[in-house]
Each structure stands twice: as structure tokens, then as C-alpha cells.
Length: 316
Ligand code: GRE
Ligand code: ZN
Image (cartoon, rainbow, N blue to C red):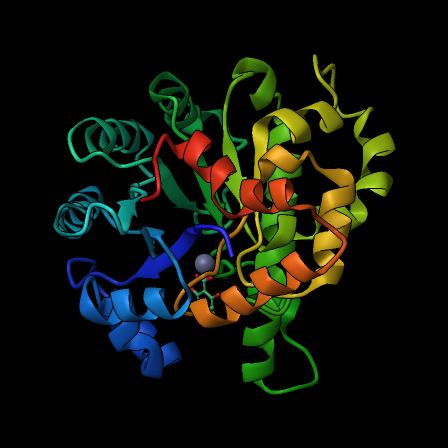
């Protein structure tokens, strides 16, 4: 297989209040992997023939000082293993001015390659202009912002509750459905708000084979023409501003759909470690390689070349 870069790979920092407890409760057996910024993580990377992992914190809304501390901790790990680790910043999005400044600090002083932000703050999405200074700063710094699913707000939770146990509702509100539909919705909201007219070179990354948007694209597109007086239509924005990773998905059917609606230079491999494992990712890379969906050159773009260009990194 070609060299591999992954971009949705998580850790949990002891500096973030409540984060360890939350992940202990929900994903206890994964906690050692989430906490590892060294040996165990590197071993798992080797198991998946993974060259470079871009790390980010798991979804938690944290105050600015805790974000700074977690980012410093991540930067230290990246300094210790500069050829294996890179960082996406954790930002206090509820304080947009501080979030923009922290993005700048982490990129300029810590060498981070962008940020990964939660999909919403208790149900408030970033089509609200108060958040746009963060996107403006990302454009100035020429780094991407990854929109990552986060836990449903209190107001959204009843939407997932039904005639089944709460554990089922939790699954429905997270990785089985809600995380992805809500992140797909967010991309459409950002488009409809005119954000991409204001910032035509903004770079947004989404995971999970496009958060359900590729499958629905041909139904959404004609309707989206009525969403305000946009300079570029949704299709142009999709091709020019949105990068998509394969994180958490390891099958050819969604990839085939993604390839049909997207530009090959916007598709990037990722795993979503440790919620998915790197060896499973490697098996999928080999499956892609053996399929007739992509040729060798396209596979290289997906595996590392597109990420190298977007993040301005090189694999060794
Ligand atoms: C993720 O960040 O993608 C994630 C979690 C928790 C469980 C599963 C998962 O944060 O994919
Ligand atoms: Zn993730």
C-alpha cells in the first residue's frame, strides 16, 4: 500500500476537565489508547502501516485555558515524534475571538496544521456570524477547519428517544445516525448562510465518507438553488471548499458514491482511531487497491498526497 496519513485520530487530555471521566464512562476499554501520546499509539500506527497521524482531542467543549493546555500537551508529543504525529488544535468555540487567537498561536508557535472543532455548541451551529472570525483566521493562516460530530444538545436528545432503552437512543444520537446527519446538516447550513461567499478560499474537512451528503447530493442540489443569492452553487462549494475523509467507514459502497460526486483531489484516507483501528483501515486500503474504483494514482492521492498538499506536510 502507499504511505498513509490519517486526520481524524483522537486523544483525551487530562488537562480537559471532565473529559477523562466522560470517556471512561462511555468507552472505558479505549481509555488507555485515547490517553497514549507515545508508545501504544505508535505501535497501533505500525500495525496499520500508518506513517503520519494528525491528532485531535475528542469532542468536549472546554474553556480557553484548558484548550491551551491540551494543545501544549499535544504539541509536546508532536515535537517528540515529528515524523509520526501532527496536531489539530482544540478551540474554545464558545469564545470566538479567543478561539481565533488560539488557532493562530497553535499554527504559528506550535506548528499545528489546522483545527478540529465540535459540530455545534449545545445546538448552536457556526452559520451564526459570531463564529466567523474563527473561519476568517483559518483563511488568513491557510489552514483547514475540521468539523467533527459532537454529542446531541439537551434540546435535540428527545428526538432520539423512543420505545427502546436509553442505550439505543444514545447509539442513534451518536455514531449510528445523529452525529452524521447533524454534521451533514451543518455543511448545508454553512452554505446557506453565505459563509463560502464571504470566505471563498475557506477549507473545511468532514469525515465519515461525507456525513451522508454524497448519497443525498442530487436531491439536495436543486433545492439548494433557492437558498439565497449565492455567488457559487452548492456543487461548486462542495468541489472547491470541502475535503472529505473516509474516517470510520471501511466499505466500498459509500466510497463508490463519494467518488461519483466529489473531486478525487478532495478525498482523503482516515481511520478515527481509536474508535476504529488502524489495521482495519489498512485492510480497507488494500480492498480499495484491489477494486476497480480507483487506479494507482488515485489511490495515492487518497492515501497521502491530498493530505500532504492540504496540510503542507510530507511523509517520510
Ligand atoms: C469519534 O470521535 O469519532 C468517536 C467518539 C466516541 C465514540 C465513537 C467515535 O468520540 O467514533
Ligand atoms: Zn472522530
